[in-house]
Length: 410
Image 1 (cartoon, rainbow, N blue to C red):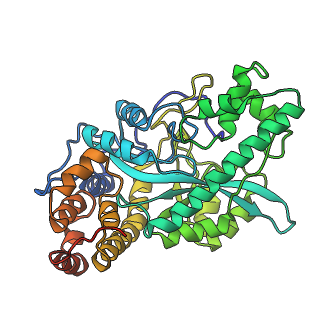
Image 2 (tube, one colour; image 1 turned 90 degrees about the horizontal axis):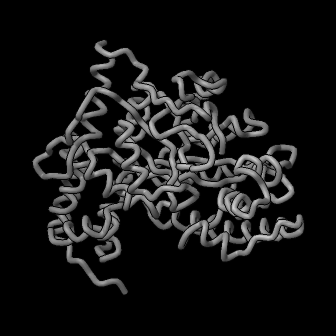
């Protein structure tokens, strides 16, 4: 989706003036959380300079982006991003690869996802809504609930894509399914951007912008709906599974105020409002009035044929990051406890693997060589503060872990 400030390539530094007490305390708060290593000694990852760039919204080729998750992280690192959330559409499949790359480069990766939803107005009119969800390194808890929802949405995307191709064929613009699937990539549910790319390659349109503006826009002649759940229910789902929910690009909504008010009453935590220049869109005052956190992200896809905001180009103030973490960390802490508790109560191999969160195969192999207690302590060290690690809840769970016997899955 297009956002405000598109076409700007210049990357800005943090907008908060440096050298002030508030800035120093904010920087320390962020560093103390974001740059802990996963070593048992509690070491900190290197902090090479004082720039504070955060990226809350970007995509890889696991959905409709052009770059691999690893390449997204590498580009973010080159741009000076310190904290990065990968938010592919309706999937978290790219998070493990991104996490591995982030650990090597000293970037803190927040596992995220952009969830496709539908909002129904009081008039009965429907419009597409995208919600961002941010989780701890252990992911949602329980894992199954969000996973089933995302799977249903992805299945609906396949049906939706076939319907769009049927409509394009009726418009004398036939596209073969195999060609669309090749553009999307193995295991990736095709989206509108993939259809747009196919239209460009077939020379039906001059560029992606024309594909959307003439055919694929909401309600357009080649538009089709999928199996998106109600937006209010998704907000509640994210809350239930230990995540932080945020409304993506509210400026793209046709009738934004009723949507935002309804989602806020359902438990929405945040909304994108910051632009590339650090200024807020017109939604800043509404966010304040509803008690929503104000965040922002580039919505980077790595498009080669269209200028877009680059990773880290949204000038998010450091205090916005502090506000986000102060809300998120207690929720993530509770979700992490729930994941460990679930394993203690039913110590199966499947649940053991979930304790490694979004680690890649190499990381999981490293953890598998340790006892559950040692491995959990090691992985928690990179995500929790010393105070959280020493909390009665974690100490109690650690004690219980010492006596667990892992069983084979049925």
